[in-house]
Amino acid sequence: MEIIKDPCLFQRQCLGWRLQGLATALVPTMGFFHHGHLSLMDFARQNADRVAVSLFVNPTQFGPAEDLAAYPRDLDRDARLAAEHGADILFTPGPEAMYAPGHCTWIEVPDLARGLCGRTRPGHFRGVATVVAKLFMLALPGLAVFGEKDWQQLAIIRRMAKDLNMPVEVVGRPTVREPDGLAMSSRNAYLSPGQRLRAAAIHRGLVDLAVRAAGGETDPAVLLGGLRRYYAENLAEADIEYLEIVDPETLEPLDLIRGPALAAAALRLGPARLIDNISIGV
Ligand code: AMP
Image (cartoon, rainbow, N blue to C red):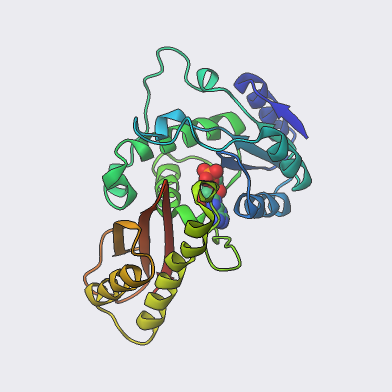
């Protein structure tokens, strides 16, 4: 595996693959790999001729009061894991290489970025969409792999690729969880041992909601009321940012569940902001 920092070199290498007729899969990440990231790399390896993994802690998707400086990093370990999971290139640009002075072009997908995480993280998805578009232009992938844990991000990238006729298939992969159900996240590293144990309640509450939905409850207000009570009883220390049931594609809140739906949660537990979701409905 080659580690490349320079965007021009990275693009030249990926363009070379494309000209040889080799299909490239791209896995965009912010590093500090866990099994969620690795599952995306494994999928990419099985479905393309060449695999490029990007590791870039993208400053434009962090708000001024967010954890950009504290975001966990371990390049040596990440490089070893990416190589073990079949990456051909690990692309690790610095912020000044990705955002040259004068950079002023942005991608926005406002209808999908307004709700859920967008409400408390203004500008976040603009940063995400822009950096992913830039990575697509550099890597020229036929396939790009993202995790369903960040469902809103996945919906936005899908929409962007469709709206802008990007020649890339965007694939979403299932959330990889710890044995107790907590969704793997680089930010779980912020949790104290006690918080880490109690954080499993996030997923358990969502599973409980999905069971009630499968049992015939179709009123989101009733389901979300139950979820709120569950968290009050099992995770009282957490601040709930949102609990919502939305259409999985448009991300619009539903007032009745008639078909596929997504229950999504964002909570603050100590220093960590944690998100999770579960598919419900038909
Ligand atoms: P991040 O490094 O957190 O920006 O994540 C990079 C990619 O990994 C994104 O597509 C995430 O959705 C995905 N990802 C993060 N956590 C998980 C997980 N637990 N299971 C599957 N994919 C994940």
